Every structure is written in C-alpha cells, then in structure tokens.
Image 1 (tube, rainbow, N blue to C red):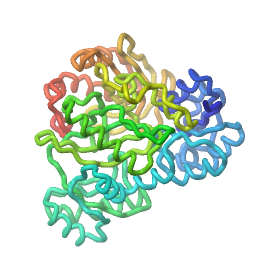
Image 2 (image 1 turned 90 degrees about the horizontal axis):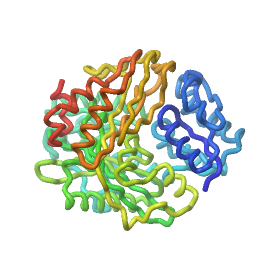
Image 3 (image 1 turned 90 degrees about the vertical axis):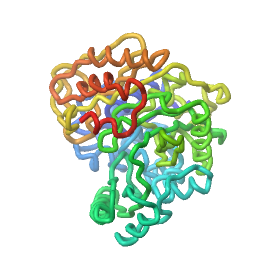
Length: 445
C-alpha cells in the first residue's frame, strides 16, 4: 500500500480521502489556500501546507506550488479528488514525471475523454450507444444550423471541452440556435480555453443515469452499479440515488455492459463514471460523457455495494488487487445523497457566510461527509457545497423516510442553505414514486 499521500483538494472530499488514508495507516498531507486555513481538513491531515491565496489559480490549481509541497513533505502519491486539477492530463503526466504515484486514471484516458466530440466518437466505435449529434465540432454558426437540420430540433448546444453542467444550452429553433451557439462558444473559450462546440439531439423528457466503473490493476474494468442523478438545477446535480428507480434488472445489465466497454475502449484504470441519458418511455440510453475521476456522489455506491472507493483507488494506484471479488458484486438496499449547499433554496443562488450553527444528523443509515463545522466560514471563492447527507435503507421507502428525519435534524445557520428544498422534494409525489426526470426541479419552482 502507498505509505504517504498528498490530497490536492479541499473541503469535504479532502476530509473523505484523509479518513480512508488514516484507516489504512497512510500518512496524509493537506494543501490549503489562505482562505481555507480554518477548515477541518487542514487540521485532520498529518501535515498541512499553504499553497497560496484564495484565488484557485494561485492555490488549488497552482501545479508548481502543489508539486513543491509534495517534494517538501516527501510524499509518495497525489490524490486530486474532484474538480480543480483532477481531470488535467498534463498535471497527471507531470506528477508521474516527478516520480510520484498518480491516484487516478492515466493521462491518455483523461485526454481521450476530455473532449466530448472525441469521446462520443470513441464510444460509438466501441459499440456504446450515443445520441444523434455532430462527429466533428461545428466550425461556425452556419455549420451548427446545418447539423441541427439533420438532427432535428430541439438540440443541445455543448462546449466540447466542458463539464459539470457548464457550457450547455438548448435551442428550439434556428433563431435560438444562432444566439446560443455564440454564447456557448464564447463561454467555452473563456472558461476552458477551447471554443469548440458540438450539437446533439435534446430530449425534452429524459433521466440522467450514470455507472460507476473501476479499472483494476490487472487490466480488467468492472462496473459497480448505476446512480440516478436527475434532480438537477442548471444542469448540475442536487440529489443522487442508487439503484435508479427507473432501471430494471435487464436494463441494468445493458447499462453496466456498455459502461465496461467504454472503460475498456480507453484502457481505463482507477475510478471513473460513465454518464448517460435515459429515455424513460423507450428504455433507450445514450452516452453523455465520462468523468475521469472520483465523483461527488460516490458514497451512494459505497453504501449499496459495501466498498470504500477511495481505498480501491489507492489499491489500483499501488498495483494491488481489489478488496472485493468482482464476480460477486451485487447491490443491496438503497442509498440517497443530498448535496447541502450554501445557496438560496428557491433560486439556488450562492449565499456564503460564517457558520454560527452546525448540527449534523445521526442515526441508523445516516452518513454525513462535511467540509465545514460551526465557527468556520463558507467563502465566495469556491463551490457552494458544504456537506453531503447520505442515507441508506433496506429499500427506497426506508431511505426516503430516513432522509426526511435527517433533513429535519440538520441545523445550519449563517450562510444560506438549501435544506428547505430537500424537505420539499422528499414530499414531492414525483420523487416519492420514483417517476421523475431532469425537469423535476423546474416543475417544483
């Protein structure tokens, strides 16, 4: 096993990685910005190094500062968590060039999946279903209009280098497409340094379902079930659950087989997620993208499959066999994750602030992965995620009941908080029955 690890991230995911590393006897080093000096992950690591000011470009995305911290503390490996540098192929290559172990997929796989058009074409060649769309970037707005004429309106306009729900827009007709194409292109150029745009069929009623994969050290790729991610605001997830209430055993078998083919097509190693769109009326699903990292929502898979995905990541990176028998993987029970954000529960606008009250729920089947505590401050410099509330039950009904109780028990004062939204969602008939899609949040608002 790896003996020492630098966690190149912050907040709840840094605490999450440190927790598993401590259990395994792995020495941990945290890196932190000046704005995060008082957060729990800084104290919980065996050692902590400040890598710069609040601006992520000068701290959490500062490659040389992070590598200098790794050298100064003598660590063996770097775990990037999610976000920041986690899907930066050049960072992964540089880490390995410096003689360190990269706890994540290989740089070539990150590159292959980082461009959505290239990823679509690779998946199609591997026999993974893809939605109707362009196989090359739409060179200009006229090319986009021509492509949309072949695909059929409405269409999704997407930044080829985007991710996390950013750089996406829907166009119902040519006029809207001309407007949205220019907006997405400019946004993509500004945010990702790549203005390439692709055009895909837009499905008005669709579910977002993803599969957790793990590329093992021996070259095999295994799938650890699916997660339902259809409760979203602005194309960004708020709730995830596993198993998906929309997926039958037969559909699950097809989902998992397609995800394994996707991983095998790029020689995938370590943890990753194959995201798909599911048409609930036909049972057809289409490849959306592959996230070449650990996902925010990985805890629901851990609870349903009884594995520690961070431990498995470390084992793969060290060249070790998994702790589980891949042939015996089977889901049990039901898990739901709620993302507790510092944001207005109505409009979902960020609302940072000092935390004057922080009381986490507890009880059977309740897990909280948090990045904050009473007396700390949610600053405006980073994502609004404060904690993840994860509940587990023998079935979906029990998981929902436990989620209702846990949401009522969770007390947060100071910053704005979206807990009232979850209290509303957990009583919503669409959600309770499981018959919902990505339009559920707009319909509630």
